[in-house]
Image (cartoon, rainbow, N blue to C red; front, side, top):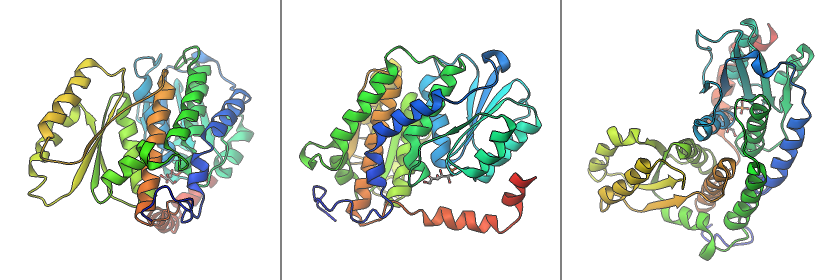
Length: 361
Ligand code: F6R
């Protein structure tokens, strides 16, 4: 469908990803209320460091949190993807397992490993395997509001993670930060949602500009994980290849590859995700990059986060990227919901005993 202002724009969205995205404020409110009501049976000083485990659409909440709050983290905290916790994880490491479905084998394996090592643990999920197994063991399980797909549950997963870590003193949310986040979500849905015509909708305009290209999404500091989120959403919602990079690291390697863009017969585009609070040198790097790549890649799109607080600014750019990926799907007549390749891979792996044994042990 070429008309992004058509009232039928969501017709091909069989799982309701557009509708779920528009529920962001409700998801935020519900996650706030739920998180406040879960008892955490260990004190703030029960751990020295934190590992946030999760994969894909659930794992990204950990990256966003660590990248955005790294200067406000009170304890060493890292996001982790994979099966095995690092050797240093022990009884003074808080392990947070985030799995929307509650059945992702990497995350479940980490959770079991953490329990074996007597780490304090918590789970963020909707899924019965994580919930049913750990609630009876007096392990806090944050049961997030449902969504048609894990990646469309980011608002509630991230809100829950931020609020639970705030309760535990790992981060300290600023006064007014939650209200600003809520207002920013509301404004983002209004600015980027399907009801807003293309002539005044930045998400529709960006999708139109990058359609038919391989989008390279560049971020730095807080926006680096948001760049990764954009890439994943373009992959999963629009079924398209996309790549991301982190500034300044990108400036030490990937930048040179831009020279071969034409030679490799690629048609890439660049989206730069900026944040008004970025380090001055990161800002300067974005500006210098814009000049350097001029004439080599087009279009180059510059986006700056709106919102006052950290959480709000994350939500603004995340929602913009989510909508860009959905409009890309519309333009290519792709159903944004199904993720056939992931499902097929998970089914193949489940044929072995690993996944079932992992939780049943
Ligand atoms: C699906 C999605 C995936 C999943 C990932 C892990 O929408 O985004 O990346 O998030 O396969 O599954 P969960 O989140 O259920 O642990």
